[in-house]
Picture 1: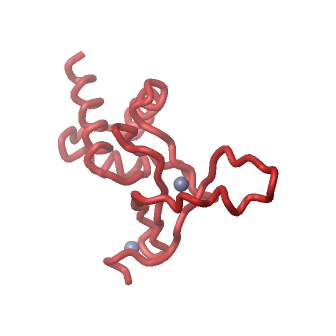
Picture 2: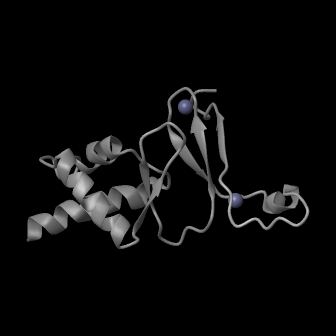
Length: 123
Ligand SMILES: [Zn+2]
Ligand SMILES: [Zn+2]
């Protein structure tokens, strides 16, 4: 039981500390710093449970495997992906008037927006 809790705690701590969506492999590598014998199947199992209990959300960028990020207090936001190192960063602003570009008479319910470019380290 305690082992389970430690594994899950490690996975959750990694996601909470990241402040950006991570791939399961990245979550595994970071979690292994505290739980060295952690396996990828266990990471997936905890991720699924955390998605079900709304602690973590899935971030799907087109044509890429799903990433996971903490829901926590984070509100609606967007992401930036570096086309060089492939890392994904959270952006904390939203161009609020996006709905205004919809045709007259249309109602916008939601939007998705991802910026692509070079991160600070790769620019
Ligand atoms: Zn980069
Ligand atoms: Zn937005």
